[in-house]
Image 1 (cartoon, protein in one colour):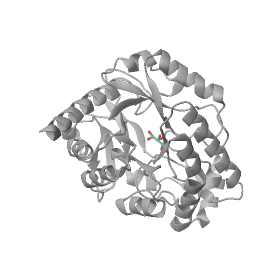
Image 2: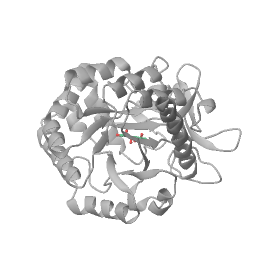
Image 3: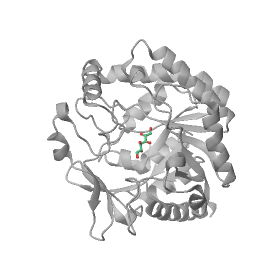
Length: 347
Ligand code: DNO
């Protein structure tokens, strides 16, 4: 296991020197943010990021994300050029020592919450999801926490309309078409692709979602058995689906060598679909975090891990989910769980 930390590049308020001081940090998970989706990342930008990491004693072996252009997901004619650009990014990242690329295939929104600052009893705050509140939103006048700056009203309406004719089957076929197109570059660059599951794992606003359950993942690996076709095992995303058995899934896909990357966070369920994010400990929420780590370790997991979304604590006003303090506590906790599970294995 290699412990890593997400870093939003030079504009992140959290410094690399602070990240380095978190126990057991091997490197960061980052991306080139200034290039529009679909374009090729300049080699200088990649080299600059890597150089900053190296100067701070950190590796840059994981990129999250190289975003997938909506035209690829929609299967539009322009996709071949965009897939060629994506493959070029993979080759350039491989040259810079990157070994894993996290991406997702969710139409339009790659995460959804209804509140980014839900206050807990102890005064901390975190992201939360209330299904009824979401359903009450008018899709034609959508205003969503964290998303209002990403699309203009017209862009969003155009995309929602374009997806009306895209079925789950078609979206899945478009995913396989995309992966087939980039696999030669992944083999050449020695990069594992790690698809991020749907967050949360169900359809939204009529947009299809296809990476939500164990059956979905089985279908993905059956359609494209290439070992570079892997999964980001995101506990919080899969875990919002009450039917997903995370301990089982973690063990199964780790044993198959399909988990190059794990996002580990805790959520607390309420009602049938609602949840709030909380501290990483098993006791704090609804997911068996220790059971998941143990299943990973016992099944030979050797990938990257990052503590996912933390709360805002100690007066920090961090980017929602991505402050320093609670993610650092999460990393420390996860280090302990991994050590315990590894010791148990040695016995
Ligand atoms: C949110 C993140 C996502 C994730 C992408 C990966 O906090 O988990 O934005 O980075 O879905 O492609």
